[in-house]
Image (cartoon, rainbow, N blue to C red; front, side, top):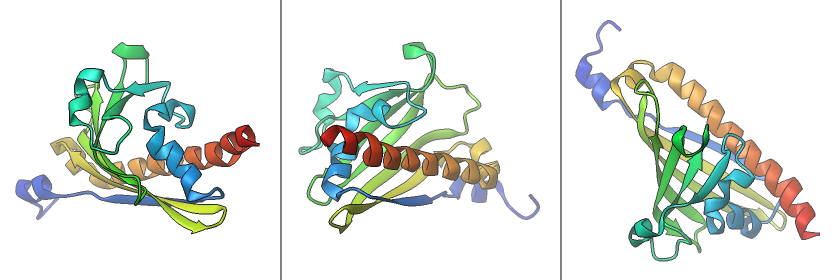
Length: 178
């Protein structure tokens, strides 16, 4: 791109924000997002299996967090593509968490080093909440060059994750609680 130097590409920061309204109380949605953090495979479409990080990693666990993080298997089992998600902040009262998502077993061409995500669940009324998903991907050089296209793709993927959460909370969790 004419006029853009390598330094500008290197310093470019991408932020992606998505939100969704869920017709369930904030406490129930937070239970799925925060308290049952390691159970992402129950509601997140692309995740084939998820589990808490190994007990050896529990030393990094924020005080009130249920686990230090999770591993999400996105492909062919433990040898396939994974996302290791380590919780850096966890606030039960404020209903938010911050995690660093690091790809594992990923192709070298994957344009992301890691993605820092903050998920917040807001009370909107008796049976309604809003989930905010704020992501700041740390991009490799290729990702910075492709950032406009990458931002569109990631934005769609993050929106789909929130739709999965909404569907699970409104249909599955509600029916199992009845």
